[in-house]
Structures are given as structure tokens and as C-alpha cells.
Image (cartoon, rainbow, N blue to C red):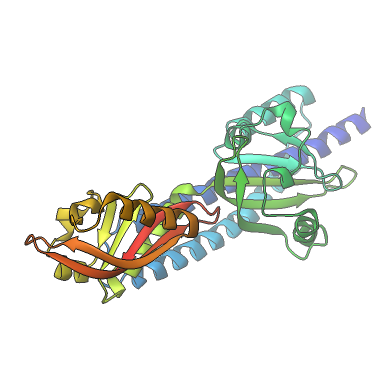
Length: 325
């Protein structure tokens, strides 16, 4: 009976530590989203570099808060386990543990240090990558993180096994079953309790919105810092930003063109075959440069030397087009 209670206690210690880590991960997500939301809601000043500096500051503060929270959580869990009597039923506690993880806001992946195969994923993880539980049990992190090969990945996680690092936080991409690329932030821990199998536990947060906000800030900095006329569109070609130099050159104020398509500037001097060739170049090479006739707000047509560049994300998908006059 004593051995059974001891075994139960050890297993529950592992489970409790993992649940506590989940709480830490949720806190990390909340602070991260608050930082991105706060920055994204600010008006863009003339010097957008101030905002970019604040992004770095806020993210550093978030990481420090998270590390502190980890230490506090581990201390509280240790105290709780020491003062709590062994539970009556391990099965009931395991069910409670699974329910807690399945309802966690982050995606949670657990995998074996030797085979790298997943042995548990929560509902959030399955929704994020689109695979069923049975499918995930036959997979490893390498199959959903295409930028890592086996050697590189093992070198990275070995820092935890050798205790060079107590945890790792890094950005990566996950590939959904349907091929969609998802930018994520990974918080990875190595748990190796005495007389129990070791495991890796990762808490993964989708950072698509954070990336979007940061991209907007970078675009803002580019736009406001340039003395050349600049027009920026989203990937569908809708104008999202122009700078003051653009207004001076074309006569159009920002509020007159944002939300419009650049075709409002088109002159009749260049036909559809010209624009078809322009878009073909952008699609194939990501860049086009040449003479473009645009119509000024006053109705006159003027030739401009224009360079258009496709802006891509980490997954090589086009997010914006930037035209410099």
C-alpha cells in the first residue's frame, strides 16, 4: 500500500507541475497579447521607430514576467504536494488533469525525448495543426515544424536535457494538415522526475495577430521615414498607407486613397497588356521596375519611375506590396 501511495504521489507531482506550467503559459500569452494589443492601438507618430522600440521593451518585460511566474509556480506546487495527502483514485485525478489541459488556451504538445513521438496533445493542439489524436500519436514535432531537420532539432532540445537551459522560448512555424503555415511561439520544458520517464512539454501560442501588428509597425516606420513617395497595399492590392511625399506628388491625401485600388491613378496611356506583364513580373520575381504613367488629381498624366516590391513573411507568402516613386 505504501509503494502504491508513493507511486501515486510521484505521478501526481509530475501532473501538477505540468498543470502549473500550463498556467504559466497562459499568463505568458495574456501578457504577450496585451503588449501587442497596446502597441497596435497606438496612433502612428511621425517617428515610428519609437513604437518599434516599445515593442522590444514590452516583449522583454513579458519574458521576465513569465520567468518569474515559472519560479513562483514551481515553489507553490512543491509546497502544495508536500502538504496534500495522496488522493483516493489516480484515475479520477488523471481525468481531471486531462480535462484541464484540454481546456487550456494554449496548444499543448508532449513528446518522448528518445523517439520524439508525441504521447499527448490537447484539443487546442489538434485544432491548430488539423490532425486527429490518433494521427498525432504517430508523428513527431519535425512533421509540423518544417524549418527544422532532425539534427538541428535534437541539438536545440539537448540544451534542456544537459541543463544548459531550464526552458526554451522561440518562434517557429507550424504547418497545418491542409498546408497552411502558422507562425507560433513555443515555450518548451524538459521534465525528468526521479523514477519516472522523462518528457518534453511544449506550450505553443499562435502569434499570427502579433506578427500582423508588428508588420504594420514596420510598414509605418518605412512609410514615415522616407522622403520618396511611397504607396503600400495589402496582398489583394488595396491601398493601406501612403506618406506625405506621395500626397505632394499626386495631389491625393491619404484619406482619399486608403481603401482604394491603385487603378484610380491609371492613365489611358498604358493598356491592359502592360499591367498584365507588370503583375506577371511581380508574381514570378517579387519585383517590377519601370516607367508608369499615373494620373494626378488635377487630371493631368505624368510619367514616374516606379519600383514595386512584394513583401513576404517567414513562410514566403506575400503580405504587402510597396511602390516607391
